[in-house]
Amino acid sequence: MNAQPVAPGSIIELDESVPLKRGDWIAESRRLVRDGARPVALLGTKDGYGVRVWLALASDSTGELFLNSTVFSAHDRLAYAALSYDVPQMNYFECDLYEQTGIVPERHPWLRPVRSGNGWRRDGNAYSFYRVEGEEVHEVGVGPVHAGVIEPGHFRFQCHGEEILHVEIHLGYQHRGVEELLPRQNRAQQLVLVESIAGDSVIAHSTAFCAAIETLSGFKPSLRSQAVRGIAAELERIAMHLSTLSGIATDIGFALPAAAFGALRTSVINLTAEICGSRFGRGWIIPGGVRFDFDEALIARTRSVLLDVLAKFPDVEALLFDAPSALARMEGTGIVTLEQACAIPLVGLAARASGVSIDARSDFPYGIYRYSSVQSPTLESGDVYARAKLRALEIRASIEFIREQLDNLPPTKSNAPVAEMKPNGFVVSLVEGHRGEIAHMVFTDARGTISQVKIKDPSFNNWQGVAVGVRENGISDFPLCNKSFDLSYAGHDL
Image (cartoon, rainbow, N blue to C red; front, top):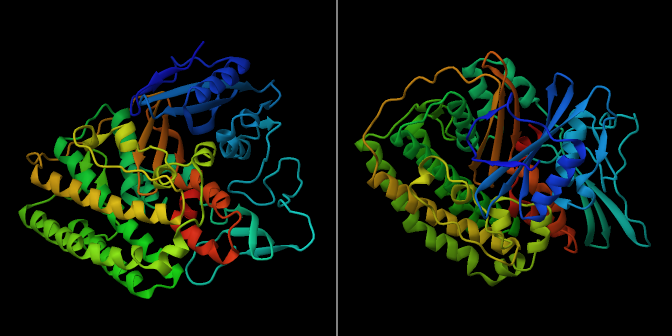
């Protein structure tokens, strides 16, 4: 039996979804990856007979999403032949599955913690960091407590002199249990939790969650609401890309563009606050539509702010990208090749900087992106320069998209209440945040209430890109490489 393609955002009937036999599930999963699909989520749900393991894979070239599952009963040995033994894309997903369910992927090449510490291993043994042995090889540990306001994460470097041979990234220090908390809350509190998954991706995560709720309720937001959500998402993208460019300039030691990019970012997030009352968009997106819409004054104000940003941006961009000293730090630093990007697999801007054409807005269009496209360029060098330059290109594309939406806003239509959700169903919702693909899988029980959620922030994919990119670079370049990805600790730790 083959996995059947489904459209993202369509309801899957749990009662009608037949699990595969273990061997068929493994063989079918391998076949899909060989045919070009990539993993989106791997999780276990409680089944009447044990644990049902679900795998979602996406084919970006065809716009199809594949779902298959198998059941580990209470009488089974909780183990299977690891997919990642010969399918490297499954590596971290299988680590997460083991951590959550205890199901062992046998022959896994590197089974390691995702969000847990030394209590992670079910056999009681503490986790041991990978070590490089050799003359003049030394180890440098950084974190989990950092200077300033950086979130907690531990970086264990294996170095030869100043050259990084390997770095292991250990996260999970602020694991908040978001996936476990969500089903136990009422709808209003669920939205607060979703907006707290990653504080700089409020719009993207709340859009993904609300889209899942709306699908399970058989509700479609008005075209006006979809357009406003698209504007909100692109404002978030512009602001966060400006923030990252400021951080890259800071790590190079180039104060003028760092300050100028930061000032432009402040203009954008202050505009967001004028629209919805929060500089990060909290409370803007709700099930059924949006809480705040545009009137003529706000439309004029948004146009004015974006035109001002667009007018100032080229001069600030030139400060960073035309300076030989800045280019010397960015070009050839932190390279992730196309082959490495596909094997990890990277998503979002980090993937596009390595030549991987991937963007949920065009590959799996949702909301207003079904009717209006946005440019999503790619570069091929896979270095800090490519990841920085793509941000500059995407800022322009997002501003153009917002201006187009403001010029063609559909007539105002009020929000509608969302009905009860369909019982015994689940949905996969995909959204493109400023870092890349966000996936929310939402399950309902027999009463039509949320029974389980699985959330994947793009940081889950892309932290391994940081580890790969810094190899053979000087340890002093690590902050610059890290900032060029600009990943979220909270989004990973959930």
